[in-house]
Length: 606
Image (cartoon, rainbow, N blue to C red; front, side, top):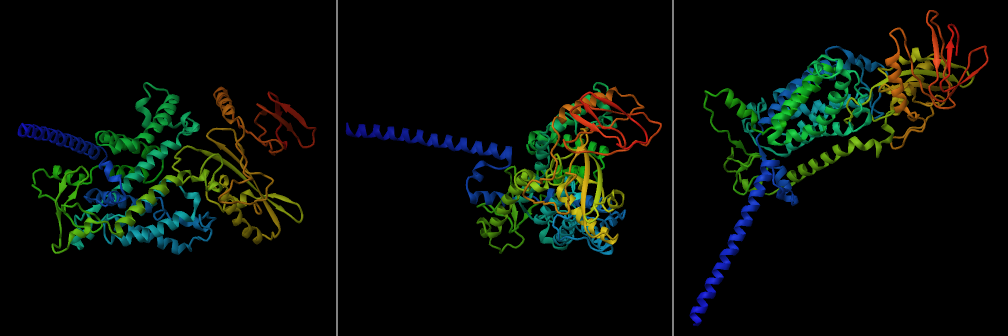
């Protein structure tokens, strides 16, 4: 009986053990399937983010260099054209360095004109090296130094596109972009088809994703969502396809603004996932092709088209070539060993989709087991990835948190905040110089404005103070020694009423500006601008073709002067809101309330 009981117990234990093993197998199988789904969906498993070592290994995973090499080639070609056109080498437009400049760092100064010619020529030569992958790292070092010097030399020329070009050039400098389709890989065969670490692709994908996503976030602005930013864009021929069933107003609001907002906000996600990528590529190509026809923004649309390819699998150029040369059998490509990468325990490298790619070591005697453990290089690169991502996320929102002195009137400094096309400014600038000894105040706008380039400086506090520093040298040359400088800057933003931007009584020569503080002599946006813009739009629709109207808003206590010189025109003033005292030289003052009207006589000063 004991024997039988023991056998039964043994049988029961075996059954329980079998059930336990089956449960473990099911759990392992479920976990493996989950990891497989994550790999297929995201390109990595969440377990690779569970610890620091696993994350370092993920960032250092060996990856095909083909897509990176093609991006480098296309980007280099477009930079070459951009240097000839946008940077002025072909048109000699950088002669404007002889005028007033607005450097980010005050100690930066433009070189003499002959030297500016030289560095622009060197910049052009380096773009050839970048495109061909020849002396790749040296060309990028030289290009980045010159490019960022020129970029930081004048804030007035800043835009999001030139900032993006600088960022992409810096990322190429950090990446192994000469392992495919490069002269370097011919001169030094060990570089040819050498694997590159995954973080090379991660940063490029992140940067392009951020370009679209943050542009969408910035469009969460009433100015954009209600269709004021790019009003009238619907008249362009690229929107003719919508015209049979949509009016121009509806195209402006729903296609340009509302759909543009959704496109920017979602395009990065659509490009990231495999199942939606083809749709995303079609949307991105259409978007950038339209922009290239609507706006004069240099190479940005074409660089946007080129960077879309970075979201595809890293070996997509090889697949495309094999389909083009379908009649020619191509041997399998083996990625060579790169000490920048970390390899699996089996000594094999893995592609992003999980397929194995055999690792071939050019020097078989090298001990690849050292590449299984993260070294200082791999850790530093991973730290760099984290810091770069954190900095790029923070910087576009830093103006409201840290760098308050860089705010423009009604918005943000255009150049690194990704607030593309949201604000349209029309500026009218007057410069007054007051002799502090005699009290005489002279309008010197005509003689001083020619020393600036454009008018973006007039509605950005930091650039306005810099422009003010350009004036004394010229005034002293004219015999002035003790003076104050006042500005009367009027600005119309996105079809609003014109209003003052700068306190007209403030001497900007002695005005205080601080990078980390709001500017106290900067005028706020007038109250009720949203309501009054609707009134303006209604009045514009009601006026006939022979009538010209000007819309002005101002703060209590301020005054403005104007003259009526056209004797053939009938001029009048209508007050829409508030109270105004109209002073006519040589006549009694007249006070007007809302709704009041007055005829303005020719030849009179008011």
